[in-house]
Length: 424
Ligand code: AMP
Ligand code: MG
Image (cartoon, rainbow, N blue to C red):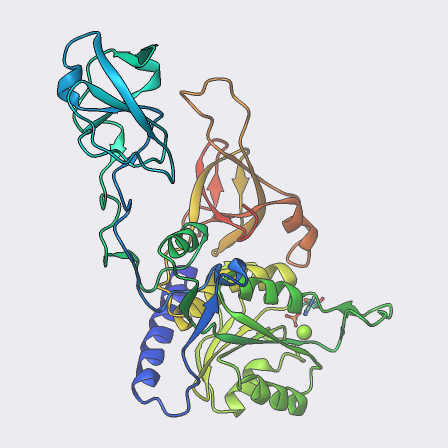
């Protein structure tokens, strides 16, 4: 059985290679980019992948910009302690001083204001003393201090946000700064979500004693969105070969299909069989992890298909490990390594078996007065009833990774933690 690292690398490699191949023999592909209008709704830009470059429309800052409140002067005038300079005017944000600072002169200047002609330094208010129309300046004053030269942040025409960047608030701010309300972004991959199981009902139905509401549909749609895809809710399908075949075929109209349930070795687990009947190539159907061992990655009729186990926690974990990177590749975003961070284990652990474990856990930061030595985050595994127990995931904020190579851990050991997307 392959490890989760190998399985994930395989997903990235195969999706990348096949998407590239299909891009070169494009025939009926829908347009791969679209325009969003930030002025109408800035949140439309969030998490989208930029398909163009954003360029500076002028120099930034557009003028020599003061970064302090104080006085703009000629540094040579303030070489000696106690230099006395005449205040000849004011420059404030939006309203420049219209003149030149000469020898023995200075201009009162405010943060964000243009540094007037003639001046080559700004001295902070705190280092001056006002005496009528004059200020007395404490040295030293360095040429160039406390202002940003025009064009130092970006020159006109320079790339301020590169193509392929995932847009977040800073990128949107830069787009606005350079006057770009409309941006070209990659079309989000449409990901069909289909839940299998005779026991499933929809949210609007009243459950019978042995029926289960389809919650995977909802968590998967949220995970698809967080990964940068556009969820297409394809509903519930019973464990019936003919119906499954029809609904999988419909799901393949989207860019990707994600199924939940029906991938174990049970009598009513038909997903892999139906995929094979439809001519799918099965790329893997088991990964050495718990929860989530039976997980199918296939290629069917030119589309990637994932068959995730139906137990909700397994569905969540396998999505994050294998489906999220596939969505990123389809969406034109370079996939990154798994976003693990390190925490100290709060208690010993002794996991059984030969596979890696992803355990619902809670990371916390103990309060500590000493700011020079901030406390390490600690991770505590939560009690849980196995992979059906969504409540344990809710009580936590991450999954603690117990690697197959080291199943026994002591309190205080550093461990890998997989953050739950959207929680932090
Ligand atoms: P399966 O992988 O099909 O064997 O499903 C395992 C268990 O996960 C089932 O017995 C259900 O209790 C649960 N389950 C399957 N699908 C869903 C779903 N869409 N929403 C919530 N729970 C589910
Ligand atoms: Mg099932």
